[in-house]
Image (cartoon, rainbow, N blue to C red; front, top):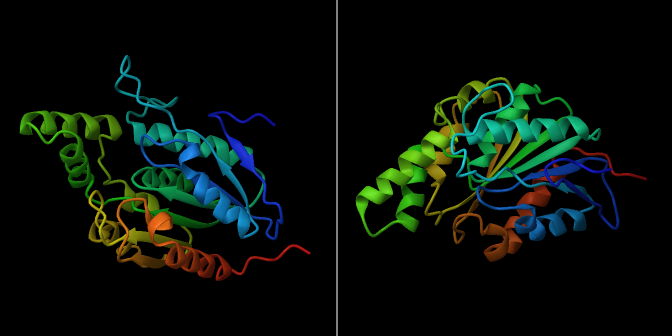
Length: 245
C-alpha cells in the first residue's frame, strides 16, 4: 500500500507483537533520521511506521490545515491523524522534540482510539518561546535582532496558541494512559523542567520519566544506548502487550 506523506512500513524480521510503533520525527528532520530508532524497535519485535512531516514553504510561510487552522503544529497534527486513521493496527506513538505536541493534538482529536501508549523523546516544551529562543541562539548568535526576528517568526508559524493548548489536549487522554517521557539532562534546547511542566499537571496520566544524565537534545539513543534501550524495553514490557504465538 502507498501511504501519503512518504509513509513507510518497516517490518520486524522476528515480529513478536501485534502493535505498531508509529514514529513522528523532530522539526526539520525526516524519516531517515529515525533509522536508528526504527532498527531498535524492529529488534524488539515491533513493526514500525515512519513518514515525513511537511516542510515550511517560504512561498507560503504561514501554513494552514484543511480546516483553516493556522500553524505548522496543527498541520503536523492533521498529517498524523490522517496516517493513524489509515493504519488498522493498535499503535504506540513515538514522537520527538516539539512535534510531540502535534502528536498529542492528533491523539486528543481521536480520543486516543487504538493507541496503547505515547513515548516522547526530548519534548515537547511547555515554554515554546524559550525553546525557540535557544534554537535562535544556536543559529543566529551574531546579532540579537536577527535572533529575535527568527524566534518571533518561528513561533508565529508554529502555532498562534504557542503550547497553551497542550493542557487541554492532554486532559482528553483516558485515565491512566501510559506515557514515557525521555529527556537528557544536558538538553540545550528543551530542558527537563520545561517538559515536566507539560506532564506534571496531568494527574490522570500514568507517566514515567527516563532521565539520561549524559544526553543532549535527541541524542539519547546514540550516546546513552544501554540506559535508553533498557528504559524503553521496560516501559514497553510494562504495557502488558500480548506476545504473538
